[in-house]
Amino acid sequence: MASLVIAEHDNSALKESTHKTVTAALALGGDVDILVAGAGCAAVGDAAAKIAGVGKVLVADDAAYAHQLAENMETLIAGLAAGYDAVLAPASTSAKNFMPRVAANLDVAQISEIVAVEGADTFVRPIYAGNAMQKVKSNDAKKVITVRTTAFKAAEETGSATVEAANSAGDAGLSSFVGEELSASERPELTAAKIIVSGGRGMGSGENFAIIEKVADKLGAAVGASRAAVDAGFVPNDYQVGQTGKVVAPELYIAVGISGAIQHLAGMKDSKVIVAINKDEEAPIFQVADYGLVADLFKAVPELEEELGKAGY
Image (tube, rainbow, N blue to C red; front, side, top):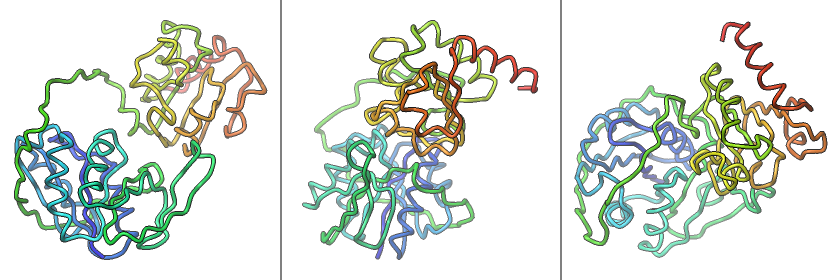
């Protein structure tokens, strides 16, 4: 059994999701290699070589992969897949774009968002917004898999894999990168944050999010939101945690004014410790919370900020 992990990176730094995908690949058994496709990404390849359990890192350094356009990634990965039994990638926005094309190219069924590996051909994945777990078995000769990385521990950086150049498949000429708008923030990235403070419809307005932002700043936390808050225009879409937003699993998740709809719970219920603040004692969020406070958030959150200040945060 040989597996190829597609690295997630920004051409300069390797994302932790790659380490977690390697853990999933190692559970399949056999050799594990990593593909780093990007432009000016030599440093990423060197970082990937340090991941424990990895035998070889293939670096495809070409302008065609600078933004990992789906058409270009498909051609590259499908060409390399001949030497592997499985191709895995984090279930990120980028991989969700190109991995289905790889599966179609190889004429196999994609196995999406696995949360456990029970064998070389048997996997567990969530269905019905995470309310049920489905065990699936694939008879395809090659497996194309996306990994819900919140379910796996990150592999350690104790390895010393060899780094080799991969032959570039070049630009397929089917699409081009036009531009992107990135939100700048000094706070941690939502999917990588150890602590997240999220607000819901109960915040009442976008201006009121300043209340939880103060707490987040004291804790060095990221700020998230429920779909209701995003749909109401309180905060941008990239704040959204949930089934149609970002799936997170921080050490601490503080839900403020969030009722706990199934859609939201699907994105954060794997958090290690969940704290809920809501004035409605019947709110579903309390069913998954480790600690719950039935209180007016506009009184409780400023008090929390004050106590954190006294504690030296």
